[in-house]
Length: 446
Ligand code: F0G
Image (cartoon, rainbow, N blue to C red; front, side, top):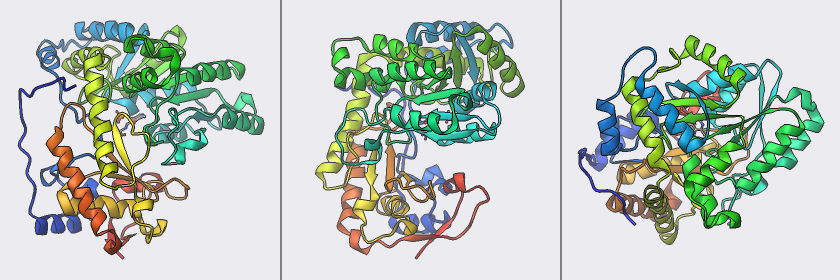
């Protein structure tokens, strides 16, 4: 059921078709290069793009900008304790700041870090410490058609194979990302989290949960995991997170804010090390790279994120969007995640090879036909991997309404009708760092 009405609005415009054509060309067929004014429905990311509540805007005004001992920080500590169950918090400017602080404290050169799937910035921060990020997804994760409920799970089998190969002493860190953003945003069961906890104990590793979308994950646990069908979302979230030694959090997702993040832990020694690193890279540990008002808004946002009415509105909106696209005949990854609908561009454009970037061709067509911006997560973003050619249509929180999604579905239908005429793309520039080329590289039609 819908849970919000609008109190403030932002004008959007659909540029004319010939203008969209020129915009695409000027952007080098890379939608990161578009001006947001030229985008009609922006589904590039769910990160920092949501609408804050009136209670959060009220908290902004009351934010305490003191350098040390800010009252807003005390509010954040209380919220993290109540919602997530951790007593020590190190605020950071966003999630990757938290990754730098925490992983710098936990990793050394030549270590191995295991994760169900490393998100881009997580992989980069592990590598930045000279360590090796190894993914352990379950095999269903890369099957767009499997209906399994917890395709985001961490594969203990794969993790044990890595232990056999490199030895437990090489692996000081085990991470579980909930939901698993780089595996189509799939959910992770509490049972899987318990088993990862036991595994981390066995190999004497620190267990970190990347909690960006912890509330959305808890909603799926209640829907899909028998043990929790009657449980409160807040209890599920606290139980699942409680198995970890530490959390990394991007407040731009389930913190319901436009900026911010933190590390949370109950381990006093780890907390001290993180605080030192935070002073170096982020700011004094009671503001850590955020304005006091943003800290205050995040404290409110965390509490709102576990409310039933919010989550039902959020997850149902994304589910319905996915169902409409599937009903229109688009190849939709199943099940639909909490934050995005993923389309299988490989299935839509069977005439295009991975080297012709079918996913990037699809995001360009969605912009050309309807001013919609999505993001490619296939051969362009992840060269040399055998992932499916996915396109992510991420849904900002509390931002778009049914009419926006109807427009996107109609746009996708138009692309579907002309799919045999869609041609591939090739690289027109070659950025230095291949892992992040999709943010800046330019392309041209083949
Ligand atoms: N971990 C995960 C699982 C993420 O999805 C992100 C960001 C981060 C860490 C980093 O957080 O952006 O606050 O520094 N994901 C965004 C996305 C950017 O579009 O999926 P950040």
